[in-house]
Every structure is written in C-alpha cells, then in structure tokens.
Image (cartoon, rainbow, N blue to C red):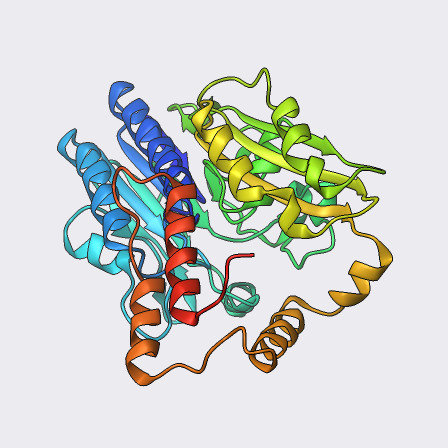
Length: 399
C-alpha cells in the first residue's frame, strides 16, 4: 500500500492571476507525481480551496486535476479545512464529492468518532473537519473517544488542527492540541492547517504535517523565499513518510533600501535590486528605510511592477511596511487604512475633486470594479485598467 498526504493547497487564494495559476500548477504537479508513482489513495487534510465557493475557473481546473487521479484508479479522501467549510450552505467540496472526485471522511457514531471503512484498501479513515475560530478544537474535545479500529486494518486519523509540538516558534502561542490528546491506536496521523512542514511520532506511528503546498498569502511566500520547504508526503506500506518538494517558481526577496533618499528614487533602486533575477521568479520587493522626502505616489509602484514583469518575473508583490515617510507626511496620513481612505475621500469631495454619482454612474462603477481579468492580460495592466476606469467614472484626475 502507498498513499499521498497533501494539505493546505488554498486554490484561489491570490488576487493575482499569475499566483493563482502557480498554486494550481503546484497541485497539478503533486497529483502527477501521485499518478506516476501509482499511489493507492490521496489524503487531503483541509483547505483545498481558499474559500467555500471559489471562482468557477479555479473550480473547473481543480476538477480536471482531480479527475486525472480518479481516472488512474486513485481514491481521494478529504476533510474540510477552516477555509473551505461553509456552515450556511454547500461548499465546492460537496459538489466535488457529488461528482465522484473525492470522498469526505468525517463520521460519528453517537458522540464517538467513527471510521470510513474502505474494504478494498483495507483502510479505516477517521476524520475531523476544520472550523473557524477554534470551533474544531471544541468539537474534538467534546468527542467521547473513537470507535476502535478493527484488527488487521490500517487506521488513519485525518485532522485539520494544530498540534503544539509541531508548531514553529512564531506560532507557539496559538491555541492547539497536544500530542497526548490525539487518539491512540492509529497507524498514521495526517494533519493540516499549519503551513510549516513538521513530523512527530505517537507509539512509532508518524504524526505528519506537510505544510502549505504553495501558500495562501504574502507571509507564506516570504517564508518560502527564506527556505521553508513546500510539498507533500508519500507514505509507503511501512508507514514511512517521504517529503516530496514541489517547486513551481523561485520566490525571491529583493530589498530596496531608500534610507535618506527621495521617494522618487524608488523606481531606480528597485530596478537595480532585480538586475540579476532569475526569469519566471516571483519577486517580493521590500521597500525599507526612512525617506528624506517625497510622496507614496512618487515610488511609481505600478511602473516598477510592470517593468519587472516585462523583464521576466512571473509576479511582483510589494511591501512598504518598513518604509518610513517624513513626519509631516506621516501626520497627514495618520490613522487606520479605513480612516485615511475616509478622510481622503471627504477632502476630495469638499474640494470638488470627486463628483456625486447618479444611479447610472454608480452601476457603471460597480460594473467597472467587477470586470474580470482577460486571459492574456498582465496583472499590472489589469490593475491599471480597473483603476483608470474607476477614476474616470468618479471624475478624479490621475495625479
């Protein structure tokens, strides 16, 4: 028997099409490996999707990838994650199950956790679905034990829950179960939820946390650039897990140091920072330092992103959290993002820079903002098109 353990794929997480495609490519690569290595089944321990109902393109591509596994005779078992579970309505996971692409695992016998029995594989699968706000841990702690595994079968526990002993140092304070709280008598413990790979053991049974397959946000990409491995595990009949790294695009951090400089030099310094970048890379631009002067608009972020992509990057994400503006400018932009936006809009309306909208103009603005990215349109061009359309409708000059 051989199986794969994948988790936290977070398909559809990113706003940029290039990053959504990279996430899909990572999942497709993992499934291709499963097919080529002829695994018997795949475990997905939550957050296959970043939302309960992802965009239809993401759903369609995911279904196609899963179908390749099913067509190869590979069964796919899954528990919900905290992102793809919906308490109000059916999620895309339910649709995938109805289509015969996956099988959900969680089952109860009264207040005891019961297994899904697969006699063909001689496997018992126990599962706990993920929930938001720690509700999954409350459910887990309310369970009155598990139905005992049958002798001679392989018992696997699937959980989208954090375990203290496998947490990285920067997440050590989050609420988590301990290894001692996990049920005894399993042959393999398949974890999800935490985006760092780690392993442990309970009575010689592996406890495995593969981490995110690609990532779901800037922090994940930054950790990838710093060396956190991304991939999944393949487990053999001796219950020995082997990590399989999945590399889609290099992720590189490039620091743009502007201490004592004008904001207008941001473009020049950014282009210097990416001078020798590897083509196809995902570039994370860190702007750092205390500026001598200049406004945020003088950084020319749109121009920087556009030209770095033209040089061969697959995606560019900027981070200005460590960039400090002069005191006078900081005072002007003091407050939360929402407060700054409100004050800026109120000021623009008072100065006549933003006109009042009619119902037709309001509908036109909504249509402009909901416009989809074209297949061959670059992310930066899409952003500029949407922004330009909105500003035109609002009657705001592009200063």
